[in-house]
Structures are given as structure tokens and as C-alpha cells.
Image (cartoon, rainbow over all chains, first blue to last red; front, side, top):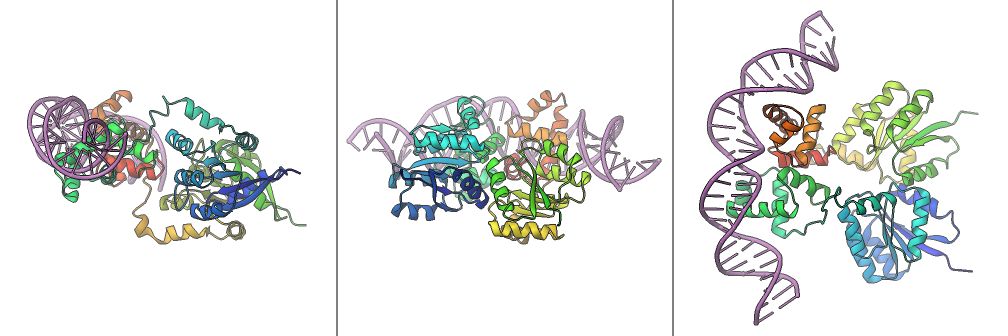
Length: 210
Length: 210
DNA sequence: TTAAATATACCTGTAAATGGGTACAAAAAA
DNA sequence: TTTTTTGTACCCATTTACAGGTATATTTAA
């Protein structure tokens, strides 16, 4: 008899874990190795145990699923990771793939599609749920969503801007020239390809910077 | 024999529906009357069918769970509504209660707590999951988060502002005077208690307006 | 059917942001 | 070690936003 496929779930919503478990156990070949509601517990587990596949949420209490995926693939490169998330940002999808995930599923996926994706991923394919494929194929609508890389200063100033602080206030708080803050502000607008702060803050918020 | 308690689920995530269903059907007294992945289908259903309790997500594709709750209680006041959401904003909790919900549960609730809450709600109590109680009890940390009530126009203009449109552009798009748009903009700033658009957009984003 | 809320429009300043640049020292990466 | 990135600072001109009003017709709700 073939060994069962061991699957782990990392998600901070018990109901999601229950739902996934119910679906997976319909098939005799799947075995729920373990489930976790945070990232570090899962890392501890994976250092001593092996699983074939992990369903990984991105919103975790301790660290992001994106970082967790990177760490996991460093510890156990052969483990297949499927992101299972609510985030529809193109950048999230790209970052997960960048960090070694075998696919990205939105939580609004249908049961049938979910099972298909898991099987395909186990066969070495890269899989995306239907909505995610649309996101990937529409860089125009979803935008130029390359998540910009910000420097420490830029992140710092972005936060202050989002708190309603004006340039001069920020300059005083950080002991900088007003002109310096203006430069950072301009760079932020360019990096986010925003026309003004309103758009800047919207994008930054959607991309999870705030 | 007593009639079973009919429960409906409105949530756009099939996995959540599966998970809830699995948990509820452990108990013989519960019966899953129907489940919906959008609000309007549920409204149609509830106009002809009765259920004792509804588990209601806030993020729905067509209308917000908050508005849906209001409509539902107008149609079927005796139906017990439990919000089942990811949103941790105090204002969301308050609005649901304001609109007649019997409680507010976060999706990270444990299975046992969920069942307890459902039973308590059916017995006429107002129930909150553990994390929600913490949110309610800490108005200081969660702030002055009274979610402002916006008019249609204000919502419309808020969206355009968040897209980086400037006042004059908005005015042209909506066939309004620039001065009118300025007034709406000012009202938005006041309603959100924001110093400038940056803060406005941040708050609006956090409160789920974008 | 009144009263309140909404949508509309205007005025006057001042403050702030934006867009286009340049420049250079320090730190990090190649 | 050279190159690139980051953080710093400056200038100029124009546009936009913000704060403080007032005012009125139209809806909506009490």
C-alpha cells in the first residue's frame, strides 16, 4: 500500500482548518499530519517532522506566510507549499511564488477546485485558483503592483504621513530638513506610482504597509 | 420531538461554510437550512423561508453584512443574527449590534466557543467571542472609531480621492462645481476626524470603506 | 408636515503639496 | 574596490488642499 500524503495546515482560523480537514479526509490518500494557528509552532514541527504538502495562510499572528514560506523551503525544500489566503494583491501572489510556493489559492475557492489544485501541486505543477489566474493575467487592472521596496526612512515617513502629519511636522520629529522629508515624500510617490498622497496611502494600505 | 433549529450561513468562502456546517451538524438539534455566498440571494431566500439563526459574514461581494443585517431584521425580526467576520474594528462590532445583530464572532474563534455562542444567542443573549470582548472593552486603544455614516455622494467622492483624483478632476467627472467637491471633501475630513487626505484615506481604508 | 439631513455652490486667504531639477557624503552591494 | 543605493539637503514655480465661513434647494425622516 502506498503511503498516505501528509498534509499540514497553518491558519489562525479554526473554522478554516475544520473545513479543509473535512474536505481532505474525503480522500483516503490524504492524511492531516498536523494543523497550526501560528507560524513558529509550525516551524518547530517541520524541523523534526516531514510533510508532503502545506496549506499556508498569509495572515498569521506571529509572522507572515510569505516569510514562513521562505523559511520552510530552506528547512524542507521538498515540501510543497500552497498559499491559502484572502489577499488578492498581485504582489502577494508574486512574493509567495518568489519564496518557493507551488501555488496560490484564494479562500473563496470551490471545494472541487481546491482538491484539483492540491493534486496538481503534488504532481509538481504550479497551481492558481481561478480568481488568482485572473489577477495574474491582468497586471493592467491590478496595476503595476510590484510591491515597492522601501528603505527604513521611507517606511518611517510613510507611516507618519498616514497619520496625518505634514512635512514640516515630520521633519521636526525626525530632526531632518523639511526639504529632505519632501524628497522622501517624492520618492514614495514615485515608488508607488501615485499621483498624490491619497493614492499613495490607498496603495500602501492595500499592499499591507500600514 | 422538538423541531430542529434552522441555521443559515452567508459567507463567500466555501471553506468557511464547510467548516461551520461540519461543526453544527455534530449536534442533532441543528439543521443547516441553507448557505449563501452573497447577500441578495440570502434576502430572496429569507423573504419566503424562515430560519432561527444566521451566521453572517461582513465581507460579501454585493452588499455589506452590516446593511444585510439591517434589511434582514426588517424582514424577519425574530431571526437571530450572529456576525462572523475577520474585522476587528470596534466600529464594525458596534454597527452590527446597532443593526440588530445578537453578537459578533471573529473567525479565529475556537469550535467550542462558537457552539457556546450560538446556543447562548438562541437563548436570547448577546454574545461576543473572546477577542471581540477585548475590543469592546478597550475603546481607548481602538480609539474614537465611530464609523462615520457617509452619504452616497461622499462615498463616491471618497473613492475618487483614494484613486488619486484631484478636486477639479472629480468635479468634472461628476458634473459638479469644484467648490461642491471641496465641500464634500471638507465634510469627509470632519466625519473621519482627519487632518488631511492622507489620514482620511488611512482611516477609510482601515474601516473598510475602500 | 415640520424638522433634519443632503447636495449643491460660493468666497477668501494661507498653508501645503507637487514636479522638475541638482548635489554630495555615507553606507551597502557588486 | 568600484558601483549603486540610501539619506541628506537645496531651489523654483505652480498647483492643490485646507480652514473658516455662508447660503439654498431638495430630499428624507420624525
